Length: 393
Ligand code: ADP
Image (cartoon, rainbow, N blue to C red; front, side, top):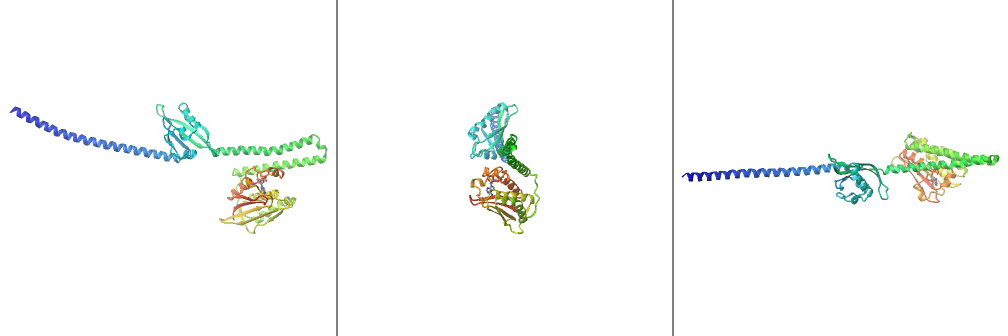
């Protein structure tokens, strides 16, 4: 009996244990399922956050004018922003490539090689191969963790091209000015020395030499005046004082001043401007423009030729003015360049006529300061016509 009771008890206990275990197992299973779901959700969230963070980072870097390059611990490209892609003309995705694979520039790889020892490399100037002659300034830094282990590197590239171009222009300008000053000065010195060496005893020779000296000192004065004008125009020191200016009257003034020069070459000056055409301009500066253009037309035009000044109103509240001569004209390759400082199509001719090589550069500056444009049309042997636009009053 006791044995039966014991057996029944054991069976009941086993059944109870079985149900308890099943319930417990079910609870555990559900709990583990929930945990798995939670983990999966957490991982998805983390991936989403990381993706979003990376996208935000990329958008931030892409908005920068500087080029940015991030490398990982093994020196492979992790991030390249848009400016850098443009600087190097990168067409394909270079992520995961080495510096040499992505950029093929030994000099750049060398900067990266210096980083573990130097930690930071600043102001390294790099000229990119190619016809454009792009210059970049490279600043690189090692990315370190708290323990000082290098996790990667970051490089920032500044575009120096414009600065380099300005530097070249400045150097060229200084060289040109020195050359322009040296020529008349050495001529003056030569004539003075000849006079001191005894030529002064011949009154005829003396007066000839003195006249030549006077011509060259005049040239120096014009050159310095033109240089000052250019420098004031470029630095914005000259403020345009705009008023309605009657063009026909203004041209008549300038023609009066140049009448003697024209008479020396038997050149006829013709004012063909319609009455009542008014520009919104600075009268003094406009006179300088007209003087330079008409003086050039007389200087480089034909002896016994004709110089005509005309104009008309055009669209958009503007007017067009032109100065036309019937001289030998300007060679096609020189047409684009005559407005550059010190450019002369015919160097000997310009010197002989006392030109500074700055007249048309001044014209261009003044016209542009009025919001206008200037250009030339010329066929060899058929004269040259200089055009300019100005705002109409
Ligand atoms: P310059 O002092 O030498 O005259 P400019 O700047 O006024 O300097 O002119 C630049 C060059 O453009 C001149 O040296 C000349 O070769 C050319 N040029 C200017 N005007 C004319 C023109 N009307 N006909 C032919 N060539 C011209």
